[in-house]
Image (tube, rainbow, N blue to C red):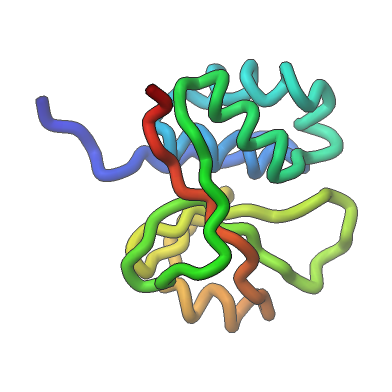
Amino acid sequence: MECPIIRVIPQRYGGDCGVACLAMLLGVSYENALVAAAQVAPNVCITGIWIKHMQTAALLLGYKLRRHRRFDIETDTGILVTNTKRPKQYPVHVVVLREGLVIETDGCLWEAELYMKQHQATAGPLLVAEKDE
């Protein structure tokens, strides 16, 4: 069966970047990712989501998200936690990193290094998905 490399899923609310990234990385619908995330972070669309809650939501969807502090931005794939100078209204901002490309939750595709420079961001941990057995 042929399938896309990734289905870009934009966030729909102010705080749901984690939901959109879970859906993109795990290949599930936004709605399924939202249902899983809301079980551990009921106000996810309003207040955002913490890394540990994304990991728990991923388990509910059948995946483990392993936190990697060291990774290669040019070859690795996962949910990248970004540290930016944006307002601290939400716990973290996350994007999908795929082999040197950043998929922002507004639907834009960036070269990773350019994204980090443009947004004055530094890379936090990378959450890498593994099928839960």
